Every structure is written in structure tokens, then in C-alpha cells.
Image (cartoon, rainbow, N blue to C red):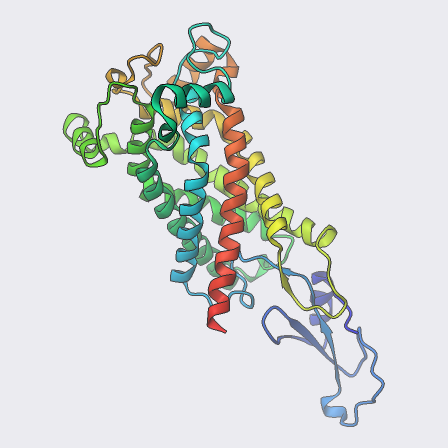
Length: 382
């Protein structure tokens, strides 16, 4: 029976006379000459030159982040494909949460105010369906799908590349101790790149969701041409600064928390057989860890998300007739200050409950679907 060995023990052994070798996918062997380590053998080794003992490392493979063994068969394009699948399916399932969240965020009235149009998640959903129809919960879904697919491709593909380069260029950070920190930095950079590439579709989506019964934009092409003609190309990047300030720590925290939580999950929850080699993290584990990672990261950066949505609708007051009081501001800091002054600090967390609910569900689905897609693609190779 093989005996599991910690990463610290491997480093300790490899500092001596032994050598860590890679065997089959997900399995590492430590070859130690001249001394028996971690395994009993009933048959003595007859050739002293080849006498060696093997320690098999066992655990769970996480498909998020570069691993030279677990994902050696997947190309960057295949990781991008898995990211696109994850983004598209997650967006379709969670779009109603996003519509409700945006409606709360862009209304500059406290939910306790009598003039407020929406004051709870259930009430907002019921009112939207009653006034605009059930399909209104998927308003802006097409540009949202474009946003999610582009974002998923760029985010996961760039994250894999960044973690791979870190593995090769900074060998001192290969250990499990440094993995969350590496994932935080790489995740922040990957999220920033994905945001810049997908931001114009995010602006169009927000405008489509935020407009009332008086339709300013009848279609996506009409929205694109109207925004470009009336406000110029810079309008497609309104609210980019708070988004970038928000997205780097948010995405970094998601990847770092997911790394920590999956490690805890596989150590405390996921069962391992005595003769079992490396196994994939279960779908349940991926859902639970992804949900907790998404909730924690969202609470941390939520005020910047409110400011981003309010900046994106500046110059669009004529399309918000019937949605209550208008909100005007001149920049990120001014937006945060005016919101806190007029609506108290709690105004910076408007729409947080549907947002947290959405963050927990979407992050869980993002990571779980991505993991499953990567495993399915890898299975086709063998």
C-alpha cells in the first residue's frame, strides 16, 4: 500500500540524495536510492545500482490554474473553449439576478423610501414580470452573452498562461503555500484583460436593462450606432476606471479563495481510497467552494460595482423616465461621495442581496462548469 506524502516532505527528501520524478498523469514518485522510504517491500532489491523506493503523492486535481501533469493535454485554445462554455451557460441561468441587481443599483432612492420602485428581490421580480412580461428578466441577454463568452475566454485562457509562466519563471512560488497568492495576482491580471476586451458589450447591456417602457434602443445595432453617434466612442468605456479598480481584487480574490477552499475541501471532505491516485475535485466540491469564493469576493468590492453602474448610465437620463429620481455625478470619487451623502453608506450596498445571491450562484457555476468542461475535453484526447 502506498503512503501519502506532504509537499513539505517531498521538498525535504528532494534536498537529499533523491529525485522527484513525474510518472503518470497526476502522480508523482520520489526515487530515493539506498534507503527504504514510505513503502514496505517483501522482495529485496537484487541490483544495488537500481535499488529505490517510491512514494506516491495522492490528492485532488483542480483544473483551475496551471498544473504540468493534470492538464498537459489541454491547449490554450481548449481552455478558452471551456471558458466560453462556462460563461455562456452561467449567463443564461443567472441573467434574471443581474437584471434585478441593476434595477436596484441605478435607482438613487433608498429601498425604504415610499417613492422607490423596487424594495425587495421578490417584489422587484414580480413587478418586472407584471409590467414588462416574463422575458424582461432576460433583458439585454444577447449583449450579456457576448460579454460572458468574451470574458470567459479571455479570463480563463490568460489565467492559464499567467500561472504557467509563473510556474516556469518563478520556481520558488511552485509550492502549495504560495498558490493562493499566485492565483490572486494572476487572477487579477486575467480579470483586468477580460474586462477591457468585453467592456463595450457591458455598457450596451446595462443601457438595455436600465431603460424603461419608453424604448430608446430597439436593438443592439441601434444601441451601438446611437451611443457612438450621440456620445462618441468613449461612451463605450464609461465606468471603466471603477470597474478596473474593482475587478482586479475581485477576480484575484475569487481565484485565491477558490484555491484555498478546494484545498480544504479535498483534505477534509472529499474521500480518498488507499490505493487511489490523483482524482478530480468533485462537482459538489467545486460548486460549494466556488459559491463561497464568489460571496466573499463580492462583499469586498461591492461599493465599486454600484459606482460603475451609475457611471454607465450618465447621459442616459432621458431613457429612464418612470424609474424615479435621476442621479448625476462627474467621476468615481464624486459618485461614491454623492451616494453616501444622499443615501447614507448603506446606499453603497444597494442591491447587495440579489448581487450576493447572483455572485454565489454564478461563481459556483463558472468554476464547476469550467472544471467539468476541461475534464470532458481532456477525456476526448485519451
